[in-house]
Length: 112
Image (cartoon, rainbow, N blue to C red; front, side):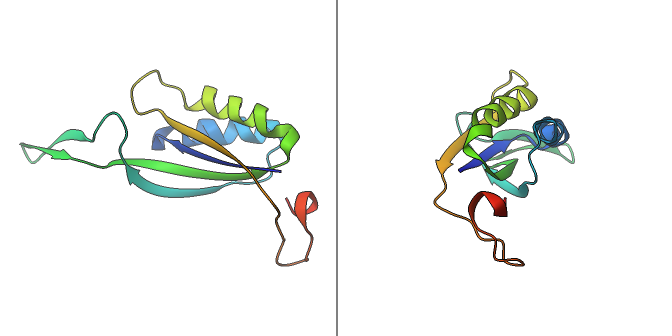
């Protein structure tokens, strides 16, 4: 099993979700986050005054997935979230030791 964490631009969520559903991904968790990478924040105009923010709003997706789907899921996220502009995000893939479905007690891949 694999655990995928992807940080993407907020407006790309629907595209990524649809791409993952097409692969048969059963679910994902989405969290609103802020951070910065190479873009080092952004400059915005608010009420006519320009100001700089050092954190950029992003979405963090967390997906637990069978190992055989992981490579295709990463590719689907990459293609769906790509804009070609700086700040498109990152995808992290971790080995997952186990999972338990609280309601039924199912474990590992049957719990996904």
